[in-house]
Length: 208
Image (cartoon, rainbow, N blue to C red; front, side, top):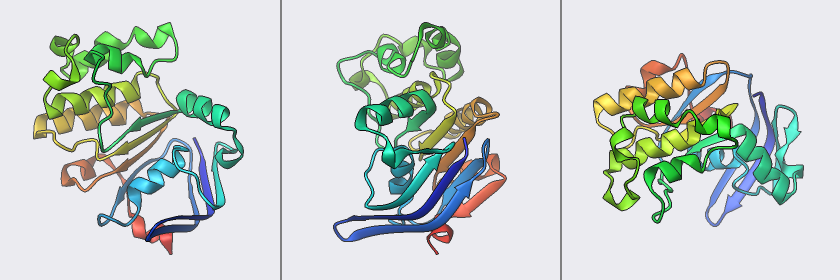
């Protein structure tokens, strides 16, 4: 999905973010790097339509998300975006498999659950509640939930946080392969992630 951002401006207390002009061609894979506090996570949330903004424009494949109603924005996001949050949001009363299936839009997508959880080595934990899972397992479950709907745009905030080397490699390989012919934006401080991207940019560069 092609992304266009222009004259974006958001202020929250003492924090402000301004992006004069930035675009990302369709099917691009981009790694955002840069120091904590520079606005990377906030920017991902803006692209996903999770935060309102005072001024400017965000267009995703020609659709201005600012002009969408609340209902239409939710539907647009559910149809097009897969989001992996830095803070994992699994519903505590649902099992791992039930949490993953929340990302499905239809029965066809649900059929992928076996392959997806096998790739992420979660098959043996499908009927467990989040409180009984390790940090790495909950992180991988969040990745599975984002991928199961086959989104056109994947937004991932520190997707390898809390993962050992083997699982970090597994998650990144799955993200990149799942995003073939799709758009992928990853925010990470993890040096292990860099090798998966040809296109890397310090986030501060787009603020100038």
